[in-house]
Length: 261
Image (cartoon, rainbow, N blue to C red):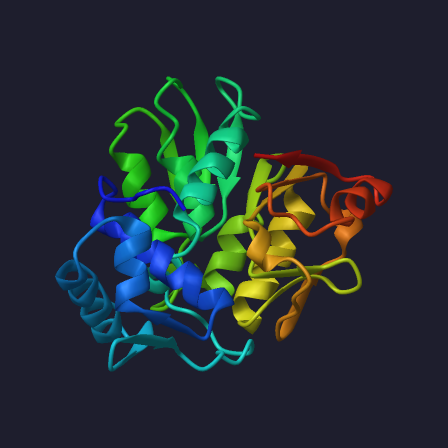
């Protein structure tokens, strides 16, 4: 592995979590060697990650947290720690599908947030979102028409759900939907841990002119608690280069455009 001594603290900590996703344990000595930084710095990183409940410190290193139940939500602050480089590239590719004056919808999520962060070249867009965080990001541009769906606020995802969100969303159709995804399989399609989120996503898809799913490769071949949509309901999938072998062919066979970044 190349030295990461010049990388930011955020990048180091995200890499530690990614290593723990594939290895049950990491050591301070090995992390120090791989990243080209001091063991003192690594220990501080591990301590901080433990304080955020993302790993368990051990003598000389850390072990991964027990696997979460897929029926439970993962807080958005934790999601931001994973695959942030891939999400940024996916966001940049998604922006290429947007034209000046477009009417778009950004679903809540950390990958769709990357789309919101990369809209500088546009002067006029009409944007709907169910994400409080994304709406706040969009207001920084001071030139877009932004509609935030109302409803009950979900703490884990910083999104709104419920009857009021349904009522507002039914007034809109014909938009390009950029859909965040928790879990995807060719057999089950898209699924999510939360029932209210799933119902709102289903209406988003129903009202959309085009459905573009944006998600990193870790979401493939997984299923969650509540079904949202069949694969063939998607028009396009944008993901990263670690997409599982054969998945691109399966997606294309289902009539889905696939963009890999």
